[in-house]
Length: 328
Length: 229
Ligand code: SF4
Ligand code: SF4
Image (cartoon, rainbow over all chains, first blue to last red; front, side):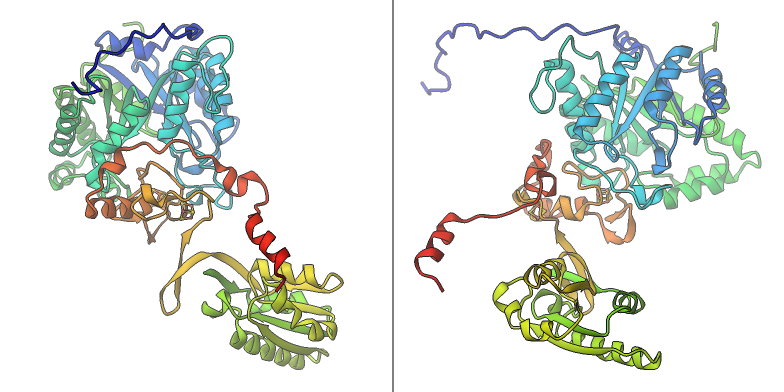
């Protein structure tokens, strides 16, 4: 008998104090996903100044049509109202936020502190991202932080929630933050060899849901989902494929050429070219894509990215038959 | 090697504006190899400064000297005579050489004529690229021999980010994505399994984050005490 197979001597149970309880209610998005609902998320970009009316307006447009909305964290490295403040305003106004947090601007001290602060303000969902490089944005001369990357950030937040431990090993006092942890996934990204391996790392680090880069190439997406399923990732993970309503064939071509991690097949471009009303064709395509991804095992909802076209979200959601809107 | 670039000439002219006798001090090691601060460059810079002063009717005497290394006391010593003859030294060594010069010659103005850029390699004649960011705790064994700290624009340890495209970095098409290279190399080596390991948060105290760095080798110090050279 090998040593490994020998019956272990019964050890006295380790003196381990159970982690303190979770503080406050858990994420609504998490509850819906666990209950098997097909969830809808969208995006809300905070304003570049104190035009809070802009936030209120976007909340009004999205409320009732989505289950939660992502608040971008200085996306494209352009200074905006912080994602924490915007998310807190959304909590007050009854639209559940998914707070994005980028590794570009915070070290692990700030990440953990901001996360506790966000939790105190009622924020539950957090999407961990590396963040766009600052040289693209409004402060190209800024230093970047990147103390940790998005995967390490997930691990740190998971440790706070599950073990009541900070990254440095000290205790999270007075209860564990009830976080629902998310990440981004680009199923069409380069290098292709590690698309699913990278997803697996995110899941292992703590990701409970992923929102994907926008999906136009259904065949490719199905393939990656199949691989993810074969790796056993989809039992623990809710995948919300990204949906972007195109406005024109030009937009499709531009995105294909300039946005990393997006694959737009030729027939999609052809289809967009075939209709003079590009916005209508784009909307139809979005609705059809939602219906198609819905059938793929592991897909638990959709993430509609209609940046600066938030008014479109309700139309797409309604036409896809996902929700009937506020008060319904 | 340490790769440097001479400051723009107009900037150097401004730096020395208020001095009448200067020494252009070259360094014969790294910055010589990258054609920025060696003997030849010191000579050219000195001539250009003389010409410029002459053209503008400004009195300026320019001496020049290049030693093997400005980051070494022994070689700095060789400059003592000329340093003693000038108002200011314009050093075109790397930042270490410039500072060590100022440390050795406490009462002399020492000016930087060179921007120290990075630790890197010669890719081809006239092209240098960064390879190591001196994090102080090398992890190249985990990443196929390609450094994510120096060669990923976000120093991601579990990359790539979503901006990687066609092997290039989102920061610019003229730069390779470090993580594309890592994945490619791990695959070639049959070690892609390493990619699946999550690299945990780093302890950056060995990097600049831990405060000014110093290496002390007691064994060598001891030796130096016993058999002084
Ligand atoms: S891991 Fe650190 S020491 Fe090694 S090459 Fe990269 S920066 Fe240099
Ligand atoms: S594109 Fe590659 S090198 Fe550039 S930041 Fe992203 S992972 Fe790093």
